[in-house]
Amino acid sequence: MKSAMDVLEPEIARRGTEQASLGVIVLGTIEGDIHDIGKNLVSTMLSAYGFEVYDLGVDVPAKQMVEKAREVNADIVAVSALLTTTMMQQKKVIDVLIEEGMRDNVKVLVGGAPVDASWVQEIGADGYGDDAIQAVEAAKKLLSINA
Image (cartoon, rainbow, N blue to C red; front, side, top):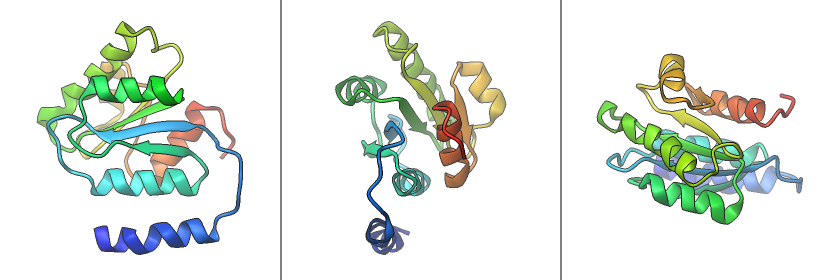
């Protein structure tokens, strides 16, 4: 998958046209989780559709995600968790955004195999995507961008 992404990303960039950013997204796999294939696909697709993406990688603490969101004036923080044992860390990102007084200005998009609509509601996130295309659609919807 990583080899395929190394080929795909430059090709998407080569074919792309210069356009204004649709929004700024800070993205990462949450602390305690090192899975990144889905996150990498989402990052690539968001970039290809015109979002400015800051991909922090894997095993990222909630505080670091929020600090980066503040630094780049992010519209969305997107948090991946593949392991059910790390899902609560997605909630921690929301808690830190609240503590920092940023929650009203930053949307939270969550994803990963165990994530569904009920989890989004339970933790107070704003949306999720089952796959990379749905993540792009969810980001557009959160920022009121026509599909």
